[in-house]
Image (tube, rainbow, N blue to C red):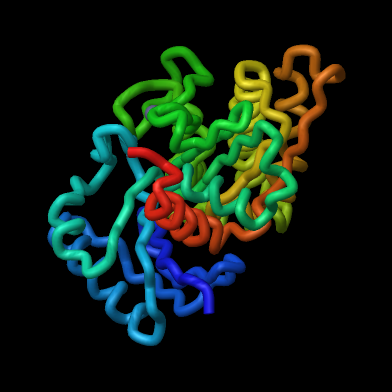
Length: 298
Ligand SMILES: [Zn+2]
């Protein structure tokens, strides 16, 4: 039997974990809620490893973290809600454990599941509570590009809406789940989830359709910037909201194409992830394998 790794994808609401085999099949998945303290986070990760590792001989663990992860200093430089104690986790982990940025891991997972697109310049946007992102360029993987790829904080409107990062006009403040929910509260005068808004939009509700239209238009501008600046040839939407990608593509109403310089001369592919629930886990597990085999330094 081949080697097995554990991949862990830390989201805003849950920590998704699973065992990944050599064929990138995912087993023994668990998704405990994401805690709010570092001590509790470490406790949950260790407990998760114990549970899902009980029937498997695990070689190493990879963890995708939200925030700005520095692969050189191996620290998470900026996190929105939880300051991690990765040193303590490393000490207490019974297995070698490696960390990376969550969107980088998701893109790595997508490429592992679809090796045929590995040679392209690919950007992946994870749309959940916020907007994460990663890209490959001329064969360089996102972890080799280190701090690059903060796609959610690209500015699409000077002095625009406030973002959770403290700045203004970020893509995330227009296209993230939290932004959709904030708009919904203003329009409906009550709390509705992003999922509910998409459902209402599908049913033809005018206010919900306006919200999804605005979100999709902003996303189109962000995607056009990626194509213009990086020359990406493929953009993949992942994350919870990518399950409504069909609606987003319909509502984008060419805002991507209208903003891509010389669009006709450089068409690109826009699509939904092949496995939005598992790419984060698959990518983190493969990252651990690459780290262990010393194919990624340091
Ligand atoms: Zn921001």
